[in-house]
Length: 174
Image (tube, rainbow, N blue to C red; front, side, top):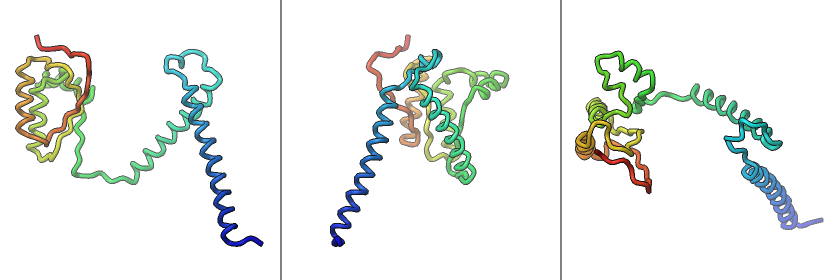
């Protein structure tokens, strides 16, 4: 008959062994998936033998992601303190036919974007996050950038812009 200490030690070693085996198998599977990764440019060709399980796993993940998003969306409540403003292609197409054709321009002039930000803040937004690219100068002129900069300095931390680091120089104003 074994003592309780020996029994607990034996159970620990067994559980550790099983956990180590699972960790090894999952690690090997993930390592193999990364090592035998199929490049996107090779997807148009005949897939190699190891690409077929990847396609199967990817389709399973995409279908389960759809199911998870629908399940989460069904139980989620819409918060009233967050409002998303999306400028999509349909909005731009409708703007071309409206009394404000400058809204259809891409990228938006900084002055126009500044007016939208000011309006959102006037209507009660506590913070505005702008998801856009500002790597080049404004399509209008450098004074447009200066006016946008003045707006940003006035509103302070209520507007958040993306930041992107590049080593190569960008296009400058003419």
